[in-house]
Length: 339
Image (tube, rainbow, N blue to C red; front, side, top):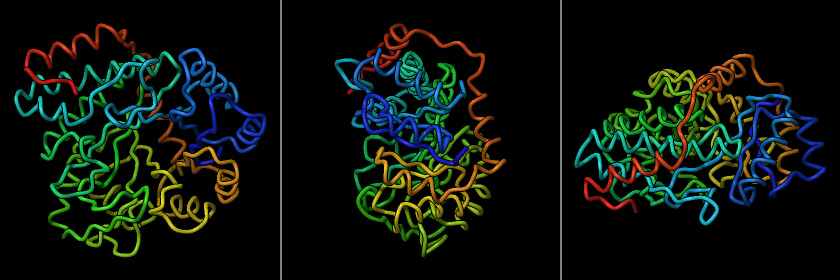
């Protein structure tokens, strides 16, 4: 098994993809809007990925946050509110905000399980900072670290109740970056004391099953390398100060914040201490280059993945409709619109 999560090009597997995935045996897969045409089509696709891998618990990921980051979209799937709506509710009534976040996550999980997806790249634990780039923006659960951590915990719990594994991101924090790491390398020059705000929610959720790194340079910790390729940040901050011992994946290898070819990028994130190299585009040449640079998954990474996937075994989730109604009622009672 390779320490990689790979994307795919379209709504069905091509013969080349089947052969490639069968031969390299990636640890898991990630889906995007291009892969999600209808409920029946998507369930068929995830069933095929499971059969191809030979593992019933193979991680099949998606970014279904709500708001502007959603791979399952109307009219086939219902919309979900962005993170800032839960922060606004929490400011009025913390108890209502927490319950709404939990119920909303369980509602997302109900739809994901229906189509065979078992991992959601949610919640964001990035603490929103004034003046920062809007790539995080309304996706964040607020600007107060305690509120972000509390709401994030409810999201992880709600997903788990619905039989979906949550991924906390973007560790150790993307909230104060002044650039979009999809397009360029953000550099954060804040002193270490200020960065305590950024890592606080991740430390509170250090027991989360999975996490995704940030392609961000933090000069106070490592002035040369972004977190995803920094052995120092992964060992000392993510594994050390934060205390995270779950499955750690990189953010997408295809983002322009990273340098080098795809072989270099894949090698660099694993060498730095990530358990999994994430590649999202479904581009075959890029995936082949990344796969060719990787050795078999480390035993510790395999164990972390098994532990993460085991957190959802044996639980029962509710149906989507009553969960959505419960969430909507909480917002109505507080007088806060969902969008």
